[in-house]
Image 1: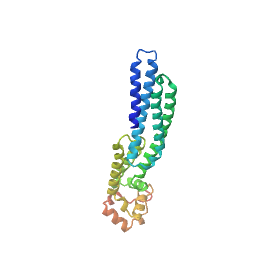
Image 2: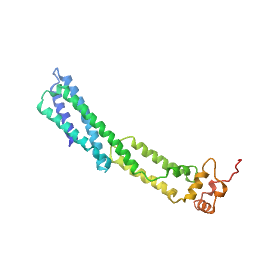
Image 3: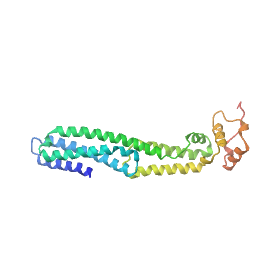
Image 4: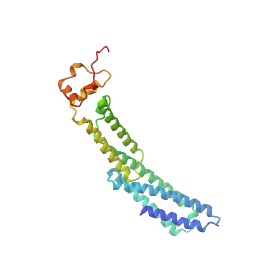
Length: 238
């Protein structure tokens, strides 16, 4: 509704502009028309973002409601100016002040939207142990899935850089999270015993791990997961 109101204003200016083609004020009217069109586009974009995020239950974005109400009041004020001042099209003061106020509100909304969007992505990110992921990267048997997870996490980070413009952008977050969890589950990382995690971490490091740490339980786990061929024994001097 509010978007339609702002677009109605541009249509009003359009009619005036056409009637003033032969007038000495045609340039002034054209300038006001172009500025108002730009303002309407900004309003349309910010309201699309607002409705998209609120419809997606991104709770932290609800704090922008007062800004939305304030923008509505400014748009209504502009409509009143049209009703009461027939020469408003050549008076820049009202439009200039409106542009300044609305742009301030739009900037405030976009800042809060960016924070809400980033929070939403972080809050729904799968509980991946990044330190363990780094350890598993050094083991060939896990490398493919680990690289896939890292790429997907990078994709999530990239999504933070831009506000969503459609529901498909929000669905992308859900889809990426599902793929991350699938790859994480495929690794079986949640079921790796603590002693095995410690062994893998040390074995994958540049210093390696002492041979006595290679216990029967660790060997059994490596055999079960067909990883024994990815390890070797070397002397300290090698």
